[in-house]
View (cartoon, helix red, strand yellow):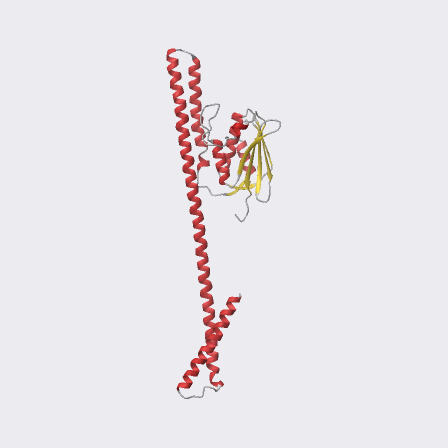
Length: 303
């Protein structure tokens, strides 16, 4: 029992006893009885003190229950407000990403179609096979764009709840999907706070590395950064990324020098990692290649 409980009981006890004794004295005086005889106050004192103590007890219980109810309502209201705010933020983020993907899809497909039309017009007047090959290349680019959109749908989804993800488990699952000549080494393990989109994040990084770096060797090293975060070093031994390109690597709609199409994979990778409360940055690997340094929050049982 806390201090307030005893104060309510003692307060009720004294108030009840005093009030009933005063009422008894007034009653005695009104009928001409000597109010100085103390024996006449024993019953009112006992009855008043017991009644007052009971009233004090019930008053304390009512206040405590009301306080607990108000606290619970306040906590539920705060939790609901946080959930609504998070849901609104996620939906806004998903809307922005979907608009971006739609713009990229229209831009890239139209870009390829215009090139195909131009090559076919040239082929009709000059029967060069190179025009056919260029058209086929554009068709493949369009197919890749659509395939990437389908593959990245998980990253855009706002419906996932952050939970405990065993990092090595999803990486090993992902590595098994790539050909045997792609050498991917995984060292370390971690339980991080993320969702189902995390596998698409690493799938995108692996795909980009294979396609653009010219390296078929990737190493992924997982280590503890501190009590709150894990650090993942994603390394390749390819030709590296020029400093000017690195500055805008995670920007929206950066055009690929290989296809002329707008990029969106690494922008979505960065967006997803930041949604987890993490970070991603890119550095040079020595003596050659690139390192993506990823920081992800540790999963804690209290989360």
